[in-house]
Image (cartoon, rainbow, N blue to C red; front, side, top):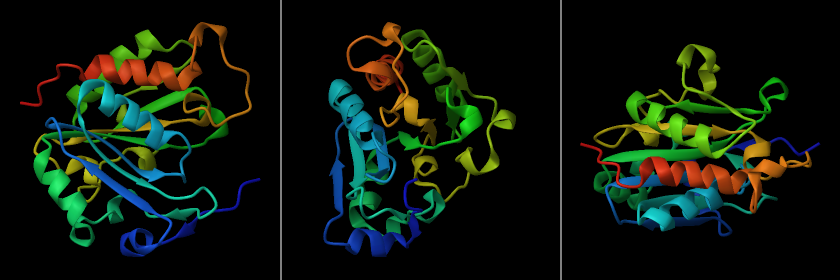
Length: 205
């Protein structure tokens, strides 16, 4: 069983010498993964999507052995000039997260305040990835995974954003056998395909 994550402040995490903070400013659509390393596969998925569509990217990667967790609502741009500048640059954000619930091993949860974009992402991910339910109804998402807090950085851009919660099987961090329909790269590659299809050409205005 993995070691429980230690709670930390955003300043503590960014101040650790083995933590890497990355900010790339490109288009007004931004991908985020600020629990990279802690939530396996999330930073890699966000980076792949951003590179594919020339989107902006903000990520924080910690070594898996560190396991420091900062709640999303406490990811404070006042403690990170890179994050503050990035949030001022983008109009909409999509944050890639990981979660684990035994009864939700095949559910992808879409939270965040931009419900129109959440529906768009759900449609494309559903087409690209078989064997998963993509949940957009906030009443069906556990409150702690809805990503609606105004302090959550995914909601800070002008048009808000979408919090994408991926179970281990959708981000390649599970020993469960893959579905042969997922093709090369497995489920994570199909998640990337769905997000790319949803965000390619998307106009936040």
